[in-house]
Amino acid sequence: MVKLAACIVEVVVGEYGVRGLLERLSDPWFFQSLSCVLGYDWHSSGTTTVTCGALKEAVNPLGLGVAFCGGKGRASRRTPDQILEHGEGFGLSSARLEGLVYASRMSAKVDNSLVQDGYRLYHHTFVFDEGGEWIVVQQGINGGLGTARRYHWGLGSEFMLPREEIVCDSRLDEALDMTAGVSGGSRDACVDLACEDPRRLRRMMAEPVAAGQARLDGWSGRRCLVMPSGINWGAMREAYEFQPRGYEELVGLRGVGPATVRGLALVAELVYGEPASWVDPVRFSFAFGGKDGVPFPVDREAMDEAVDVIKCGIETSPVRKEERIRALRRLRGCVPFIPETRLA
Image (tube, rainbow, N blue to C red):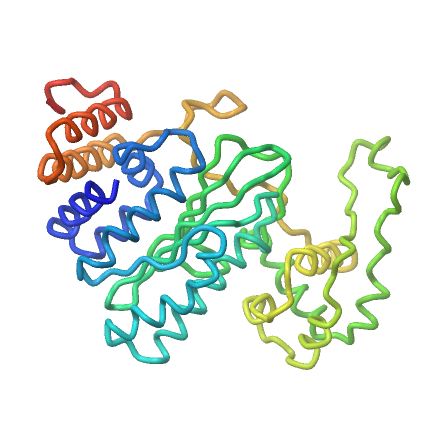
């Protein structure tokens, strides 16, 4: 996997530059195709963790002007140190390095706290180049459903309106999405709430439903807003003293986690009538259709380009002929409608 990854990346950088590599890795179709060609299963959560690990091992020593940081589990916690290490080698300024570390932390916080879809992040890969351009590929797991969800952050992402593609095989009936455009009023109301004395805010928040106690939504058929029990009141005190000027400043504070974000959103809806989005933001799937039976559109031109680039990387790889043939067969399996002669 490492040998093939190195060859394919060198072909992409040679043809399209480092920026072209970042654009392709942030594209779910290219990333998934690359994972399959390198030898991983199509619908396994390991397509993210193992492919990112292979890319990190293959690319960092090549000196192409791009660095892979982070990884799965404990490796993800070393992302800030690795950003500083590689960034200093690229000659980036201390201010730019601080910005990259901030981007890594906030992208993880957005998908863990601002997008509450039940998938807890356990993998975070941060990729950046000599100019300080960056992308993120991270993944969360839902223990109850036993499924994974991958989050791609593209070039030029903004934290409140990220240029993000979310990969999952299913769409949830309900998920809090504070990054959605329709959540703008809720975000503003949350900032106003955080700037008030937390003692007043605490009085606004209803006590959580006791264990075994029934709720009215069981009979009404309507969604019931249940206040989370784990709100960080110490963080709310700090927010009150800090007086954030915007939602990004608020959620960027240490200690403002999922429960606090959710609690503020619920109070903003109950007290100020500013609802947040509860529509699952997942936008991409590799299935032929969703639960509603509507097929997902396929950009065939982009798909053909991805196949050509990956095929070129395989053919120029120094691995044994048998390994190249197996890789080409895996690529053919990803796009079965392509004539065999094209991949021969």
